[in-house]
Amino acid sequence: MKLALRLSYLIEYYQTHLESNNLEGNEIKWSRNLKRRFTQGKSEQYSNNRIQRAFYRPFISCYVYDSNLFIDERGSVSSIFQKAADNFSICTIGDATDKPFSVLSTNRFTDLNFLSPAAAGSKIFPTACL
Image (cartoon, rainbow, N blue to C red; front, side, top):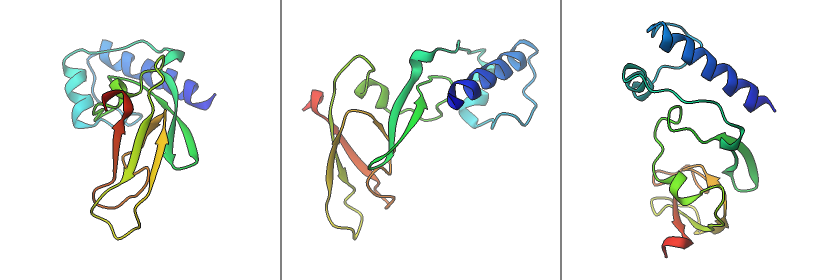
């Protein structure tokens, strides 16, 4: 799987720079949060168990590597969609759009703009919290 190879390389590259305390290099997009985690000395080991299926758009799935280190702004998505749990969520279109109302249910990670790239994005309501 391409994602597994890419993440293995990314983590190895990050670890090499962490050990040499070198924040330079253009193989990684050094976001503000990743730089902060780097200066704090945070690291993580690669695990196949972190690879999960996700929805980018309705009926378009992809894979995501569930990482505390490399996902820049996690939100509460990991607590909603735990791998072992069967937690369905109800996704609705954001209210700041001219598009007609729509709703879908999913049990996978979803992109913020899952139903609409409009200003408010999608609203996700996990059924375990309802």
